[in-house]
Length: 426
Ligand SMILES: [Zn+2]
Image 1 (cartoon, protein in one colour):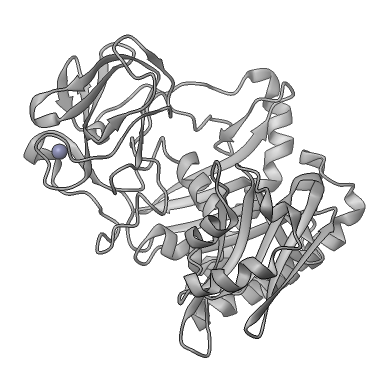
Image 2 (cartoon, helix red, strand yellow; image 1 turned 180 degrees about the vertical axis):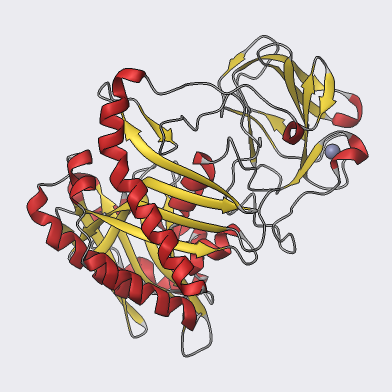
């Protein structure tokens, strides 16, 4: 741990002398006169959001960023953030001055620092009209403040190494969940984060945060990512073309969007969070039963791996509640043991890649909640990892020049992060 902190300090100092002109120009987020300031803020950022800290009582604390659910109350949100009941009883009365907390807007995010024992340290919520609500612990009480702010965009660089789980590593590197999930999403055409992760895998990230008075109030987009999985390097840079279409590409301009996702399970803290399941929450070997089993709690969403027409949705023997999707010929995929189907999933319905088609369950012959997933070629089960599947969506040639100008600075940041890590390992 101390090793890691040392690295960060060095990295931050290095960053302070790095011009970020390229990024600023590429995204048009701010005039280049603020370059100096950006570097400064990156320093503040690192000091302000330390690695999980060992507090006096021996508990850990983490920064969590959560999206507000539909119809969710402030108390429910605090519970979901891991705040203990007796704390909630003290926070709620102290938060009454804030009108924004009484009318939480679903889809917006909140940031909170909570200890492993359920103590709330800080809470931040950027509400409508750029109103920032801050709740701060003061001894055993809480102070609430609500003010109009104009947050500024900052660029943050982080890197880490997988020891036991992806979220363990991103927590240790102070990477918010939303960015960890975006990273998993970006590489989901190449890596099945449920099955492929290895100890020693490494990642580097460049992303946006919105900052007010040196404090992060919201996380923005992932701008660049590198993931080294089992020795193989994958890179991604964000690009928005002049028509406003956005996506992730390799630095050489190959789109990372694939015709088929590697896994029907979106990677999240929930789907990867089974206790005891380290980085292989897969129940059985492929050969044993011609499918892949993903252990996950009942109700975890299951998504379509590719655009398709629903070929079957109903009860089928040992599969229990089963969905079969017909993709471009000769491919199809099957999803078994579902607790229920998503709305509108019936024979003949059209789905897009990534659409939720149902929810994990244990219907049919299942010993516990899991998804049984099959990939089929001409109706025969195949291991998708062993197949060469079609790719798609190249970058339009007319955007090549803009792409290079916009993404080279991002690729350079990734190189810098990699070299910094390599230096530490020497
Ligand atoms: Zn199975």
